[in-house]
Image 1 (tube, helix red, strand yellow):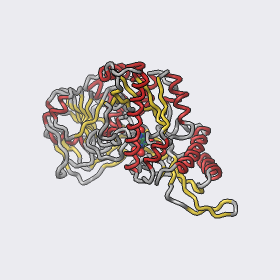
Image 2 (tube, rainbow, N blue to C red):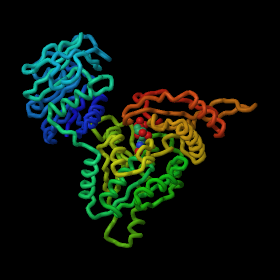
Image 3 (tube, rainbow, N blue to C red):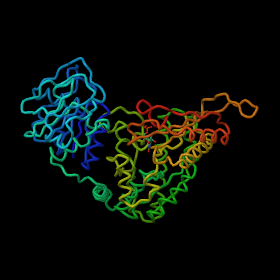
Image 4 (cartoon, rainbow, N blue to C red):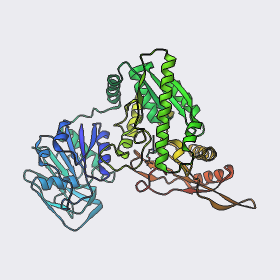
Length: 517
Ligand code: XMP
């Protein structure tokens, strides 16, 4: 494991991803974790992330010197670099001058561990106020910029490395290479973290956890639950039953697709539960997003409990109760629900924070440490069909969190039509792989005046939210071609009564989240 110590900006997640792209397993830990606890994880290398603080600021997060003395290779980036410099006796000045954005870097030791094989002049992404003017004893300065005399340093003896900039962002031209140099050359790691290894490891872990018991897995039609189910099926075979809960919040054609694509390719045992009335009754009168998420999470579990007892009854034996519930929870879900590194709770993803407290199942979450693109790789490795592996994400709470306002059957039907049109046109334009996903949102409590034929209308707006993203942690709004947007808009306003306006969401994440609720 490579530990990425999070100093409180959004960079740590990205660094962890980049390390995994180098085929080395990595995990994010908070900077508040005591160093002996970090070392107890037996890390093969440690990376100190950037962060928003100045090392001089009151209460700025620090790091115990012991971290640098444990014989574990360490790579400090930006704030992590300054902290390393300061802790080990170098000089960090509060220059009062910010260096921000693309900056030319001059490599002064071209053959160094980090810089070997990269050009003497390269563009790097900077974002800092303080600057290091003298490296600690034992370090060699390996690069500088106009504003910063010590922009990178290395101590091969102690295996300590640092750069003032952000190698993890795409704007740093040789960033990935420098990170890989640290991992392979500095820390001596091998690129062994592959989809095949993940499958092997997880199958063993699942077998150890479930033993000879039974499990059920909720299928949503999305890639996560499909891959989780396929992994568990590989581990325990027929002792897994998949449950597809038709909660009435699905998109058009979704239910049919689950049966067609997934069951056909895996031969998994499937139980379909029609629970539309149950969910809609529970959601009646509720418009608060968090409350909706919690209700949906709770009802899911209640349905699973019922399904589990039916499965046991059908099996006709008393001794093999269903003890385990498989969920396709991903690493970003864990982090965003506040369960990862002490990050703020942004929203209760229904399969993490939305679970009821009296849960009787034990959870099996084989994807809990994976990012989305890694899940797709694992799906491919397991031989799942393209239609599943490359499906765009769709949230478990479904259209329930895409109706801003109370969820009713009429509103769902209306949104289903608008969503189907948008999806049809995006597919026809060949854009499915270009965009990450395109939530279609109904502003049910908003009305605006329109004119159609000769008459005044007073209808609801539909919001299109096409985004591009690498892992849903951050996202940008997709610049879709105007003619595609025009076709979607014309068709929705013509074909969906009650909708007289289509608007485009042009907000990145942050500050907006991908879904509206
Ligand atoms: P946000 O809205 O948090 O979404 O930017 C990030 C990604 O997660 C999906 N999402 C969910 N997926 N259960 C899920 O399985 C949920 O409760 C949930 N909420 C959001 C969302 O579609 C996007 O891909």
